[in-house]
Length: 121
Figure (tube, rainbow, N blue to C red):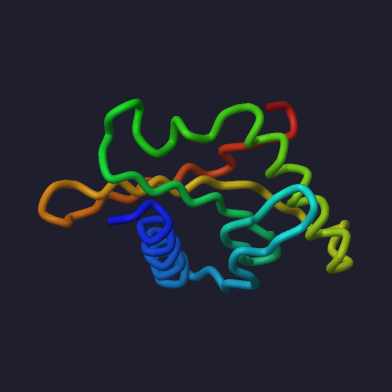
């Protein structure tokens, strides 16, 4: 499966998982000059920015290893931009990562890393 199609499939799976767990999806693939936020959701009073990484294999460290320090900087900047544009600067927020690995036979595993990227990263 081409990587773009795999990525979209992963984002859809992550959105289903979040909805099932009580999150309200506010935006998908929100773009700004700092990059793209895969999913923006709300859980209670908190805005949650979710980076979704989908991989076809665990080789090379799996999906979570694709979120390095440079990506973390861009995600923080994009999150602040979203909050500013939507007049939500006073609202608490966090940045999570959902890592999806598609195993042989089409079965997938999903791991949710809460508050994976903090201001100090």
